[in-house]
Amino acid sequence: MCTVSYISRQGRCFITSNRDEHISRPIALEPREQIVNSVKLLFPKDPQAGGTWFAINEFGAVAVLLNGAFVNHERKLPYDKSRGLILLDVIANSEPQVVLQTMELKQVEPFTLVLYVGVDLLELRWDGEKRHLKQLDAGKDHIWSSVTLYDEKAIARRESLFDEFIATTEEITESKIVDFHSNNNQDFENGFIIDRNTGLKTFSVTQMVLDQDQMAMQHFDLLNDRKYYIPFSPKTLETSK
Image (cartoon, rainbow, N blue to C red; front, side, top):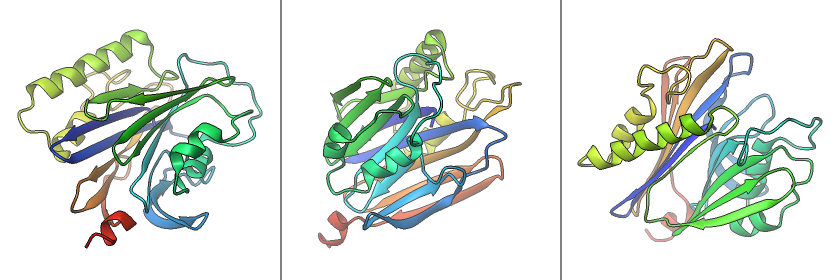
């Protein structure tokens, strides 16, 4: 939930996320389909809080979470609800973009949520006091880094590496994007795969590939060296066949 990229090429959309956590936190459960609020979802589950940082629903909408909004905030415990459960509240709905604008967020820790719905790409930043909602250009490439783990200099460096990857890669594929997300550039503090002395590590890389014919999630459990590939058929695809 600490690095997210969005890339769209010739009708295919790639959404990829790195999850960085402290080693004291349990490893997420492998991605599985679950029914939440009567909506079919696919997501890896955080066993500690029961939420997630990455999910797709049966209507083809994808939501991804990052910790923090604009700056590294001071925590004001206790919070009423985990951010991972907030993501489930958003995505377990036929109109997640509406929920994003109307749901109650008081006493929720600051976060950034990226939502892809059809042809729309939305970014919500909750700073603990105010909701900042922005519609992004879904035809352009984007990358986000969590402000709770990376300072402005590190974020700018990561954006530069992303721009270089886009500019120098002749054909963008899911495997090349995963490789990019799996390269720390010999920087274990601020690379895309971190391993800090404080106990913070990159636990996994998760990717959703969406196109007109099929959708599938890849999940790489880096700590256990396991890979999962889960095809997913939203209603929009099922009804068109």
